Each structure stands twice: as structure tokens, then as C-alpha cells.
Image 1 (tube, rainbow, N blue to C red):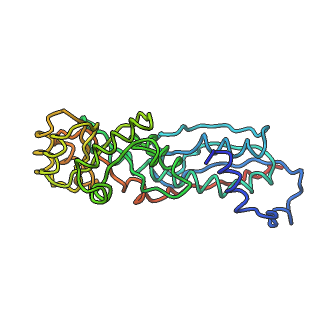
Image 2 (image 1 turned 180 degrees about the vertical axis):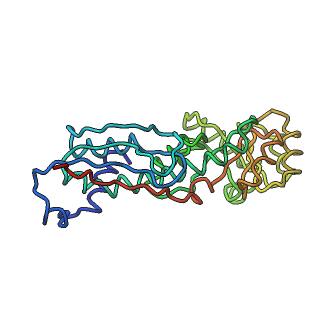
Image 3 (image 1 turned 135 degrees about the horizontal axis):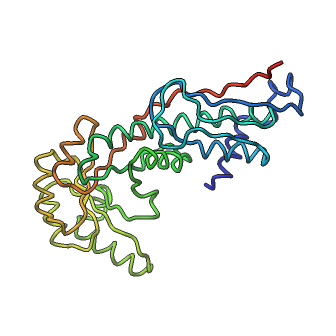
Length: 281
């Protein structure tokens, strides 16, 4: 979904036939200012998106920004001041806060995971465990927090997971058929395949023709053995139940990537508020 289309649909969901609370008591030509206040420590994210929402409603909206995406913040900090129609401030308020709070929560949790392995080569990846129609924002927040994006969807990378392998009849069949499909369709997509056991790893190494091996639900000990077995022939990715407490031990095995759906689906929204600046005098 295009960004502007998303914004328009989100605003329509909230406003429908009118923001009657505002229409009832605020003159249509009233202009005002509002301040985005930080009420919780973490990593701020979504400031640029807030600007785009306000300027979508009013191209002449003026926004003074004091913080930038990815910056560490604390309670009492102020991110920006917006000056535009009061009607537009009140229309956009909840959408801006919903997006920024969610993104900031994800960026903050991502940074905590990244900090655990920042001195090691392994890179933290997100997953497709995202909110429908909100994936772009959530994956953008992961980048802001210092992580990396895995594939965006089913269309931009081949990932042969357990169900694909089982439905297809085995690892070798899945790899051979996939490579033939890409050749027939003249597609240039990387292939990642899931291994559930060391025997799976051996089979994948025998067949080849992949770019990355995902080692799913391996213990740290087995992961280290698998990484040594692969020996740099293919990229390696650890996945499955990896927590902030355990991520460092997985990274120390020498694995290239660690994917953790929790950095998105376990993130708690950051507390932010958009407050009117009252006219003086």
C-alpha cells in the first residue's frame, strides 16, 4: 500500500463524515500550535512521518523539529512543534501518535537487542510477524533502532520453510524445483532454506544452489556445530525463540544473522503526547 493511500485510509477510518467534536466548538479558520512531548525513555521514531501527515492535510503547515529519528530520548524532552489549522491538528493527532508511539516502541526494543551484540559480527533481522498493512512502518522502525530488515514480503525473496519442504516432498526437491522456477520465470531472487536438524544441513550442503541457510530452533551448541559445518559456504541465520537474554550466546557462535520476531510483536508503544500551546494574552 502506498504511503499516501495508507494515510488517507487511516484518516478516513477515524474521521468518516466529520470530526464532530472539533466542528462543534472550534472555528473553521482557527490556527494554532501543538507540541509533541516525550513521556518515556527510549528511541524516538516517526518524526518524518508526522511531518508528512501534517503537510498532507496542509501543505503550508510549519513544523519546527528539535529531535531526529533514532535519537535517545527521556521524559520531558520535546520532539517538535507544529503550526497549522487547529482542525488539522485535531484530525491528525491520534494518527500521528499511534504511528509514532508504535514505531518508537519497536525502535527502542530493537536497540536493546542490538546493544547486546553490537561488538559481534552477527546482524539482527526482523521477520514478517508484523501488523497487516502496517509492515512498512514497523520495519522502518527496526532500521531506526539499529536492526536490519529481512524480506519485506513473499515477493522479494525465496524462503523455503518447513511447510514448503514437507509439502514439496523434501529438501532436495524443494531446492531443485525452486531453481528451475526462477530460471523459467527469469527471476533473480535469493533463496533461503530452513534446516531443522544437522542432517538437514548436510543435505542442503550436498544439494547446494541456495544463498542462506536458516537454522531454526537450534540450541546454541548445535548452532555452533552447524555454522562450523557450513564453513562460510552460505550465509547462516539463527531463528526461533531467541530472546534478549539469549541473543548474545547465539551471536557468539559465528552465525551471520539472527532473526527475532519479538522486536516487533513484543514491542510496547512509547508514551507520547501532542499538547496544544495556548495563546498568550
